Amino acid sequence: MAIENTSAERIEKIVKAQKEFFRSGATLSYEFRRDQLKKLGEGLKECRNVLCKALWADLHKSEQEAILTELSIVEGEIKNHLGHLRSWMRAEKHSTPLKMMPSRSRVLSEPLGNALIIAPWNYPVQLLLNPLVGAISAGCTAVLKPSPYVPTVATVLEQMISERFDPRYVAVVQGNRDVNQLLLEHRHDIIFFTGSPSLGRVVMTAAAKHLTPVVLELGGKSPCIVDKDADVGLAARRIAWGKTLNAGQTCIAPDYLMIHHTLQDDFIAAFRQEIKRLHGEDVRQSRHFVRMVSDTAFDRVAGYLKCGRVVSGGRLVREERFIEPTLLADVDVESPVMQEEIFGPVLPMIPFDSRDEVVEFVTHREKPLALYYFGGKEGAEHILHRTSAGGSCINDTIMHIANENLPFGGVGQSGMGSYHGKGSFDAFSHRRSVVETPTWIDLPFRYMPYKLFGLVKKLL
Image 1 (tube, rainbow, N blue to C red):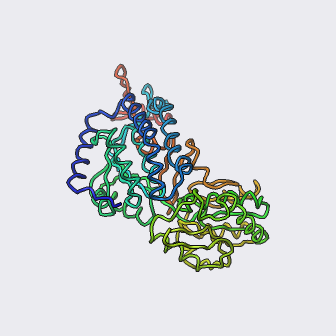
Image 2 (cartoon, one colour; image 1 turned 45 degrees about the horizontal axis):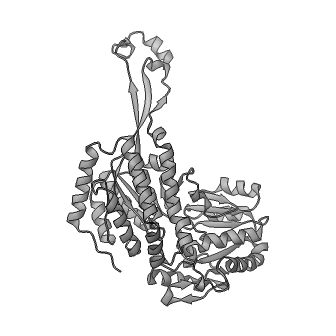
């Protein structure tokens, strides 16, 4: 199944129509935003089965994983916004200094305007629709661009959106990177992009032409640290889960493992056991183990097995794009598996002796989207305070993304801006400062020739 590129003429028509629709003021009221959020929630509910089937067709993603990692997250986001939207829209009163009395001050959250949302293929439902929730909540219009690498899902999403939303308000545009380029040539009021750092640079370069604000949710090499006082069995279970979720094709998957040298053998044994617990004796037969998205992705990740000694897993079936969850030991830190984001079920191990060694290793590399630490409170605080990452879990992996009350986003190479919950509302909003000055009095102190300036100076 191939996705047909949306024409340049169609894209231009959509962008122009959305600009006009936004200028009409139709998106601004609480009632309109509430109703559109409900409409999106109803669409997800009605399309749940067909979306699950599409995710299986494109990624071999089981219904359970589809619901847990895609649909339920968007549904939770919608529920959160519906519960708080009125209060988020309300003007915030702020204090006014004595020198400005009797003026009053407040902050209004106003929609940025026309949004462009470009989503990747790895979580194609969640990462397209979760930002859309923020755009709707904030009062923006949205052009949505799904990934062509998941054509079944992209087709279902387009149908779901087109049946429920006026394209002047929310529209889906399909196609490859040529379509991305066409979209980026237009002026938008905000661009929300999820993908690789290399493509993030392309988006940011295009946005700079119009000084368009961007939210970039990128990726990188997220370290997972298992300290000497960690519970090895628990660490192996939670790391195995986080690394095999979506077959490691997760922007916040543990990318490499730093493990205290005294625990390496125990961890290898525990990891093997936990993979069996999660996926059975033969991972290939598991309904819950996703396949690589393409032959190109398979070949790239399979090539990493040459970068170390396979101590667990290692089986490859190219015609199925299947890569068994694999642990690598004796890895050269200059090899490709330690230089590139893996985005697959291969986990290289780097032994260490001290926490300072860990800090040195992590901080001499680009800031990651996530950092995971397994061990006691003292070690956790040490690592948190000496490193930087988009988000972190202590004695867990992945789960910080599941809390819609926490902002999710990157730092440095791993992205800029954040979203989820009120963060999503804020991402698509401008916080507008307003000072309201009464007309019943007009104090002369601020006017030339600045009479009584000595008194005024004391108030400044």
